[in-house]
Image 1 (cartoon, one colour):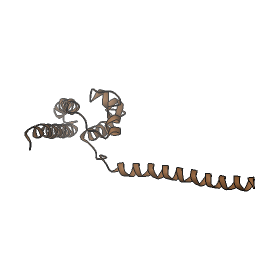
Image 2 (tube, rainbow, N blue to C red):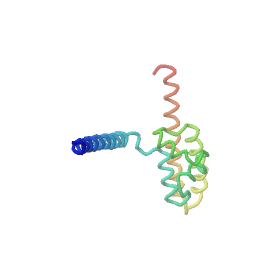
Image 3 (spheres, rainbow, N blue to C red):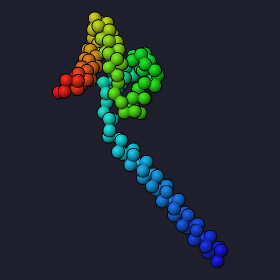
Image 4 (cartoon, one colour):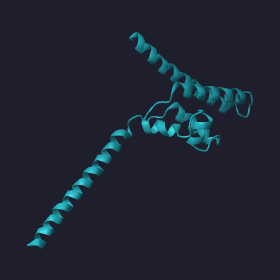
Length: 143
């Protein structure tokens, strides 16, 4: 009788464990899927990083964060983890650096096309800065 009872407890225990892990995995999968579409759109900084990486100007996000954004090496990773937008200051630094190099590149025929891409990305940074700023002062005046 003790063996039969132990076997039933084992089966019940196994079922409870299976349910616990199924629930945990289901919960994890739900969390992943529900956040997958949230804020996963590319930001202007992602576009700048992609271009710089493609042309070999940076090797990784850490280098981009420190060399192009004047932030810590984990800045881009932190933005992604927190699903946050870059600060206005960070966008301004990036826009300024893009404009500086764009003016150097557009002065030469060999790099004029790339310089124009830098200008376009700089303008996108400025657009984002203006959008963010407008949101702040419009909140203050009520429209």
